[in-house]
Image (cartoon, rainbow, N blue to C red; front, side, top):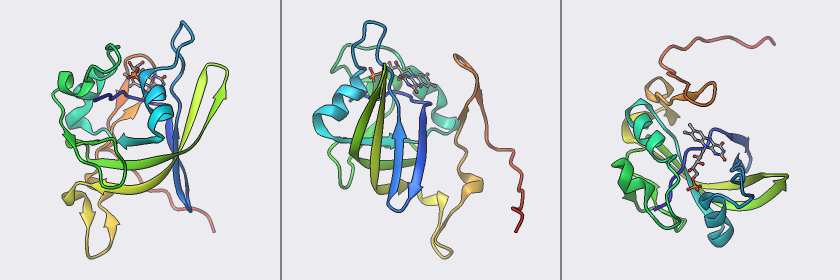
Length: 163
Ligand SMILES: Cc1cc2nc3c(=O)[nH]c(=O)nc-3n(C[C@H](O)[C@H](O)[C@H](O)COP(=O)(O)O)c2cc1C
């Protein structure tokens, strides 16, 4: 199974829920495997990364031949998705099953825009009564300066918006 980290990723809207990520073309001008896969099947899964799987995420950045599983190499496991064909990563704290809405090509950037069709969240991360994500337990990591810097998100602060 193909898996690759993408820091050029964001949620872009809620109604409908959409997200985007941007695989840049390789130096020789060819698309990365992730871009090729989206072009072929028009579906993909975004797996969020927490501290527990940070190192495995990094392993997935290795350039393997098309068709060779980055997941196996990183010690991660595939779990079936609910509404899209590509599997999700079992160890991820949250996974977004997406259908490609469209892909923009801007120079060597491919901006893949996805409609989020299903969200998986590890049980402990969801407060069933309040119907809210327990964000204080969702310790996703953040990408800082390229190439090797990240941050933890365990230290947070609240700031109230002005009326
Ligand atoms: C933390 C991290 C973030 C990355 N973000 C991006 C990105 O936003 N866009 C990109 O093209 N490559 C990015 N890369 C590099 C890709 O993950 C790498 O080229 C990978 O081998 C592509 O795999 P693929 O050919 O299976 O798509 C990132 C690598 C790391 C470690």
